[in-house]
Picture 1: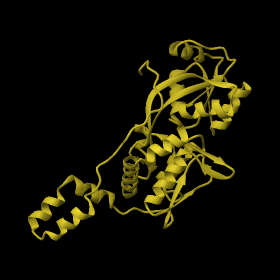
Picture 2 (picture 1 turned 180 degrees about the horizontal axis):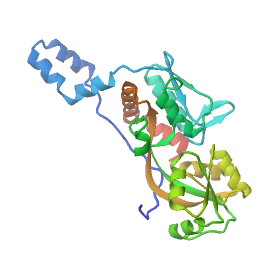
Picture 3 (picture 1 turned 180 degrees about the vertical axis):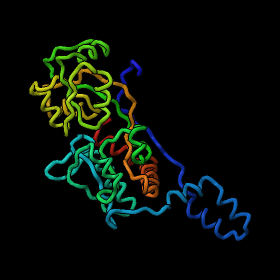
Picture 4 (picture 1 turned 90 degrees about the horizontal axis):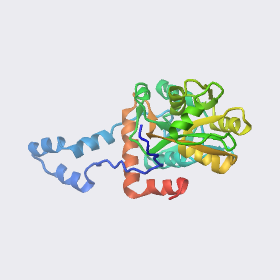
Length: 288
């Protein structure tokens, strides 16, 4: 772990796409077997074949999404309507695939990967999932679409300060109770680095932050963009005590039985990076 504190950054994950329609037409017009064989072996054609793979959907014509919808500004459920960066991302991907985007009612975060693995209820999970080797054993991830780090929120009058080591030592005590969202990388970090504290896994960010604000819990460990938003907008009596440069990357969750859908989403993500749509969404939800 680096001692440098990293901020939310932007990366482009632009993949080379298929040959243009004109070039494909020219290849098709060339009737020699040698030309066909050469064309079939090029990386561009391989990419085209992958992106063109068929995929299955729970419901024809729809991309059904599972999310906890309690992770603003990534996703939230305001006035019974899903919104946030991930929601706009899902809508844009669906549009580029010629599909209607439909969100399930809010799900418990730690139930989403098992749901996608089992199949039958949702096509993808899009809920700020950090790509981890453990999760990749269960499901497939798309290419990363956003970078993040972890952070720890506390009430402003908690009275802990200093550098990273001093704050971790202060939190790692038997009289400290740290809230986490169940099944997240925030929970994994807290259990590994705060073994003396009591770690309390909860269902939602709102419940965790409410507990910190009321003094029920001394700290909350979660993704930095989310706790930053919470401390600025919803729980202004709280602050970020620690930024943890974990260098995480978010990916969309897809069943291992549906590689064609993963390929199609990767193509849409690459196109969004190339045409500037991804930057527009980041500016809208995270600012410059």
